Length: 118
Image 1 (spheres, rainbow, N blue to C red):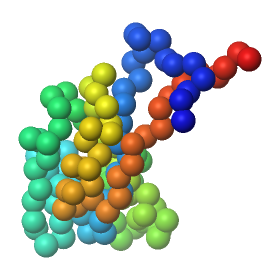
Image 2 (image 1 turned 135 degrees about the vertical axis):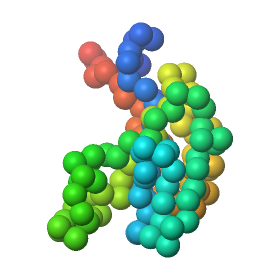
Image 3 (image 1 turned 180 degrees about the vertical axis):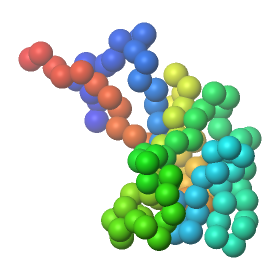
Image 4 (image 1 turned 90 degrees about the horizontal axis):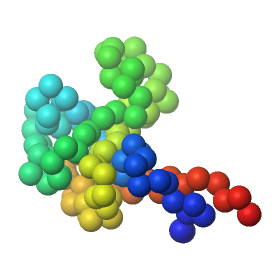
């Protein structure tokens, strides 16, 4: 789908990939690695362009212990975004991200657009 009106070139909206982690996996932001319950590590740094960011969709859910969360909060806790540098195409990295061991699902985020005046 082509958006009716593309964002201005100076827009600060960056392209991203939406990711759902496999159960038992989490992102260790301080070390920049994914960890599984069994202790296996996965470092994605060589797979993404420079200045990419990996963030949780709902960061608040990662602050406490998982046992205090409801079933639905535990599910939400598995969702992340990989924010790419401006000008990068999420489609160029989608297959690579889908092949990462901690990733259950990955999709390119929808392209943001402005409403059409027609």
